[in-house]
Image (cartoon, rainbow, N blue to C red; front, side, top):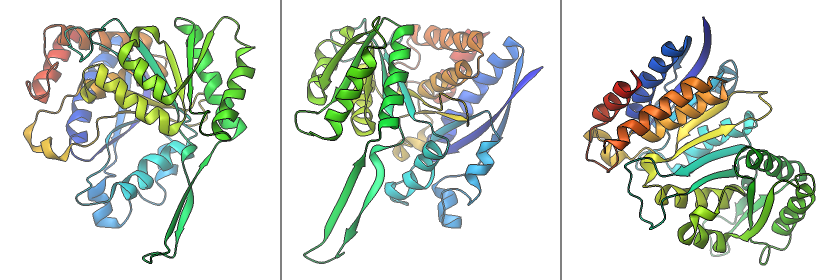
Length: 347
C-alpha cells in the first residue's frame, strides 16, 4: 500500500484541536482511497520555546526534509512569546528553507455559509509570493533606545522571485477560468512595483490565452468587496497577498474557512499546509475551534500529493456538513461535532 510521511506540527492554542480533527478526517479518507498517511507529531511551539529557548531544534529543518509534506495547526501565543519571535523562529524559516514560494489560498463560500456580501457566486484563488518581498527580513535598528533611534526594513524583490510566482499564477489561471489579476502599488512604489509590473507584461506575452489585468492594492481591496465574482486568480507580493487573503477570508465567511498551502512547485522539498486563523488563545479551552479551515488545508495537501480522489472526497464531506449548517457559525458547534459531521459524510 502506498504511504506518505507527514510531519504534524499542531503548534499553539487551537492548532492542537484542529490538527487532531483534520488527522481523523484525512486518515479516514486515505484508508478509503487505498493509501496510508504516516503522521509524526512534532511538539514545536511556544511551549517548546519556553522550555528550550527556540521554536524548533537546531536540526529542525533537516528533520522536516525527510517528510513528504508538513501539516501545521497554528503558531503563536503573544502573551507568552512575541509574535516576531514565534513567526521568525518557525514558520518563516520553513517557508524559506524549503523554497515554498507559492502561498495559495482559495476563497469561495461553502454551501450553507452566509458571507457578509450581497455577492455569493465568487471563486478566487489568491497566490501570494511567500519567501521574499516585504517579509525578506532585511534591515535593522541603530541607536536603540535613544531619541535618534532608526529602524529600517527593506523589501527585496528579485527577478527570479517575481518571475516564478507570476509564472505560477499564469499556470493556475490556465487551469481555471483564464483570468489573472496582478496586484501592485506601482504609482507610489516606483522601483519594486514597477519592476513587478514590467515582469507581468513580459510574461503575459507567453500566455496569450490568459486575460491579464493590473490593479493597485487599494483598488483590488475595493474590488474584492464590490465585485468579487469578477476575479479568478489574484497574484500579489508577500505583504499585499497577506492582507488581501485576510480580506478574502472575511468575504468567505471568516477565518474558520481560510485554508492555505505553502507550495514548493518544483517539489525539491516538502510543502506545508495550514489554516490561517491563528492560535486563538482566548478560545482554546472552550472546544469550539472550527476545524474546517484545517481540514480544507489537509485536502489541499492530498491534492498536492497526487491523491485527487481522496482530496475531492474530503471537500465533498466538508460541503455536506456545512450544507446542514454544521460549522457555519462561529461558536455554535463544538470542534468534535463538526469533525463528526464531516466523518459521517465521508462514510
